[in-house]
Length: 262
Image 1 (cartoon, rainbow, N blue to C red):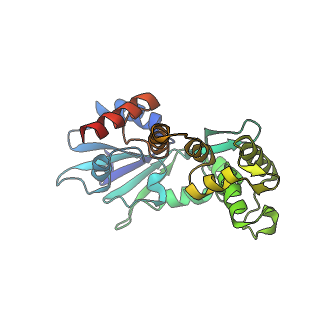
Image 2 (image 1 turned 120 degrees about the horizontal axis):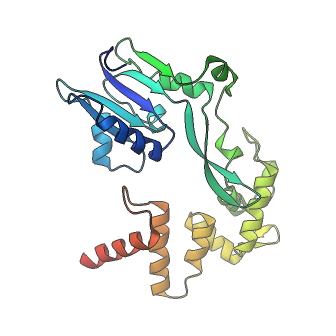
């Protein structure tokens, strides 16, 4: 497509692993006038800017992006879009109480949104790597997040408001009963409940605004050293370092060294 058409190209891929593999494969196959620019949430801000800003004069870009480029960002100079028609999403399993990443086909609405990134200022071309019949069978819209998420934080917040029965609320999409039961079990395990109300510890946890697991860790600290350690761990888990090591121990000691240096 690059050989036949002008302009920069945006390629939608499910996740970081696919982006890195495609980047390696394309590096030796594209001309010197084409820049390869990955784009995903954990990338450094400087590298994200390279992908978003216009290519230098006389050059074009191939932007390899996750669905972050679907609605969140406007990428200048894109005239060509290639869509793998897949995305990676977090899906909560109430049986295990764990959230895992799964790869799934995008909705028809997402395909339309991705196609719309081509040629914002001039006629463009969009190619979906999916059979027409499969595209027609795809869901019309993406599933609402509340139907596939861990609801423990939501339940703790509702209880803090004084609502012990989520069914009393007017929801656009009713939260799944099994997910709410899993949320209640977790809050009980964390000592956040007394019957149908928040316990004293639960009130402290809710006041922090963290994920219930992290909040339980923070309020369980018995002295300043434990509180400082818990706070650093919570900060790393909630805001992982961009392009940093995914190992919690490495990130923890790197932050400790940085704080000591200052």
